[in-house]
Length: 328
Image 1 (tube, rainbow, N blue to C red):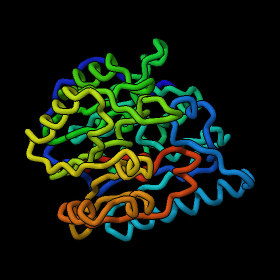
Image 2: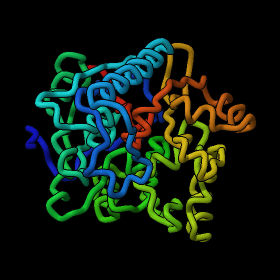
Image 3: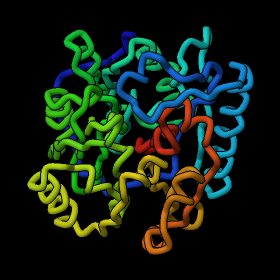
């Protein structure tokens, strides 16, 4: 899809971001949700729900979506909800953080997607509405989607966990997170790449975790991360040092916890301060010590996303596209 004003040239002004989290987000309400056969090849968290009709599956997903968006709104987050577009052939449309990122200097990134049926999720109409209807300032659109023609992918803030304050892009390399594309992002947006391999056990093998935001999350003062998924000891120590060098508290997650999407959380700004959004599955997977550690950094807000997690292989963070743009 061609976006007006899209460019691959370097943008002139990349002032350091002063805020890790935002109070503005957008979400896409699903109309065609199902287990996406095109992404299941390397998203090992996706499963099939037996004995449920397609219509009931979508209805369940919509209820879960509404529960999360309502919970965020009740906490004081400004949630812009867009409907999935006809002809409703984008089963993963409710995971918009994979195709777009927004930045305080007015830049927007558009990203190359692994699955062909996900590429039509990219929507210029949403950018237009955010700019012209909601009043957010858009300066440049940096379009990385040309990488799709070279079978190189970088699925937004699924592939990259951004430390926006210290300008580091953490990325677990996988079929959906290409290191060359990552380096291009870092050059365009003035970030330091922190690339590594994160693995999960499946069918007796150690296989790449498909998205970095499954195994780690960065907030203003913390990093929840499954360091044990980084099998290479030197890489693990290097990632830990990068995190600790910026004064972030490390909250260690286990592989069994990230299988319950405990790593797929997101710090946002609510009416009374920071909140940390996650699924109920993630919340209940945390132990008492981890919960207490996270509560020092924000109110924990969660919703039941069982259907979305089971069939979609993604959770709360995947469903939330942050709006870091400023108002004009």
